[in-house]
Length: 498
Image (cartoon, rainbow, N blue to C red; front, side, top):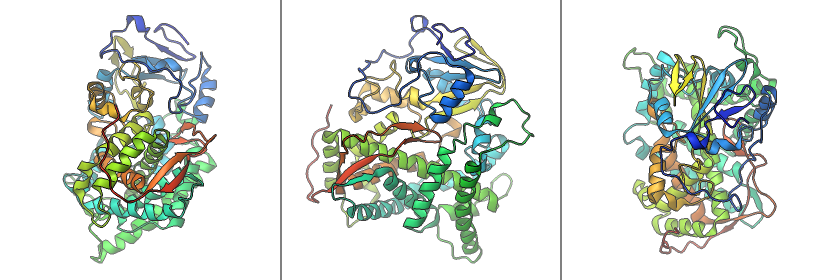
């Protein structure tokens, strides 16, 4: 690994700390003992092909350790250049610019196309603008309030489902959070509860699709013209086809209900009946399948991952778990469904936010330059990849106090509030901010509170989860916890731990 900023064809080169002006107050750096698990960063230089093999195994462990302190780093190959940006001003510049200036990377689009088609997550230009004009109305204004009952019902169903498993035996918690997250999405989109076989099948297919490493697509890396076909592994094609087959059945059934005037007033109906105000066009069947695919991926996979890591972190920190449980028991009336309860779940929200800081569900965002740029005095050629790594930005050792430690109380400190504003991008930001970001925060806060209100979660000895990133940040072999029922007696929440 190069110690200066000169271009290095075999690895990242970064600005030397001694010559970089720090745009934020220096944060305290914690020692690495007794911190939540994180992948071992690679050491030293590697060849392009070694890096590609590491990347296929796990995106995060393929990156060098010094990126937690660098403001910017460059990675050169014979095919393209990448610039990883941690400078908050530079991150904001990329995310806030018109999408034509920094569109989604073509390499990422190629990898995700079998599953997502031309969905809003990977589209660019006029197509993206058309899709956003149709989708945004389904999530704006008071829509979260109208869908809150779906979140509530899914959370209650999850506590009832987990009661049979709350006997102290190890439970693979990612499978359970996947079930409840899929339940929320299906209830919100299609006004129906998800049945166990569907949830299990979807969870398995999404997990299999991730292990196929669709983003690590060699034909996407090669500098071929866009019109040339790209090849995907058999597993990538098979799992994508199965997932899209399930979605197609749901969309076709909803189209019939809309045509007969019997469709419920939910998100799917809203999107399928909304016309682009500029063109008057609506989504056809294939376009709607594309959009539902990203709702399932972004709304199911990411929420499931964030919830699972939240529960694991609370199991590691019993004092915070008891605070969340006491708060939830005092605030939640299990016989009522009321939106205002969200404002009373401050500790649950802080824990969920802290889990997304430490384990961002989408660990990296990749953009592409459409014209030459200048980043921190460095010339960036047209066609370069611009990587915004939430994994490194959320743990940056010059931006956050004790960045690798779990501390939900940080969000009430000046350092935490500054980080929330400048260095926290779990939902992206700017024009391409996730339209369901507020929905996701409400969902995670509520369901975490409902689960911890009902059960105590404890660690399983010798079962430490290993974070691994492909499409989303999951645990390599799952997250195993023990569940035991709690007493339903409400109690006053204790003071927040500082």
